[in-house]
Image (cartoon, rainbow, N blue to C red; front, top):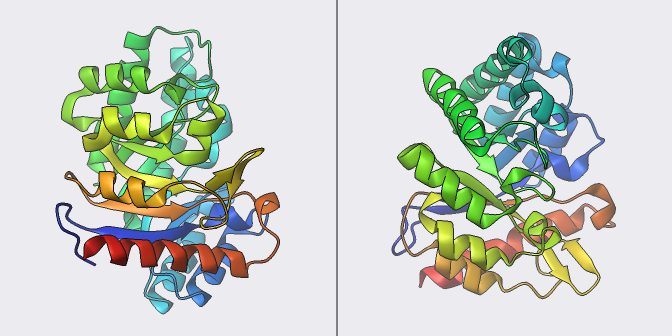
Length: 271
């Protein structure tokens, strides 16, 4: 769907919405909903094996889905694997990182998402940026863009830190904006958009209301019209990916309702 100002905006769903359902079954659910854009959140080393990836590719073809991004299962340990003082562990961890990139390449995914380092961290900001630069360069070998996500209690929770990161990485810096993580870090999502609009290429979407920071889109009070209008102003393609935790909804129909709700808003904004 072409939008005025931006190249393209699409809505999708992350397999993370169905965790702890196995990844391959979650992708099938997304396909059965008729959703054509998906994110895969890997949860286990065996899910990177060639036969498993082949099965995911077959599912995406069967349902005519585009896998736009992947989340490594390494998220829990990126602080210690990639952003510690122990260089040998960093170098060894690149083996698994490359397996994720190979999976992304086979799936046709454009982005690999990194959480980064927990605060307070043991390396300097400059070293953090240099490590991330190295991950980006490795990603380029596979035709995959490595992007930073804003996450509470991580270096990336602050839009100002991300601005500094952009200043260091230049045009290579791209990010995914996670709405619920912004709220949990006591930041407005629109603060990230105002400061980093040209770098946001992906959005993890959820709704909110008082005392609930993660709800299905359309069930809270978040101003999605404003978000879509601001994201649609210029820059790269943008994907709005519904990403919820299983405890944040009661029935799977709410996922499809959220997807349809966002699609209607995008259509309205386009005219």
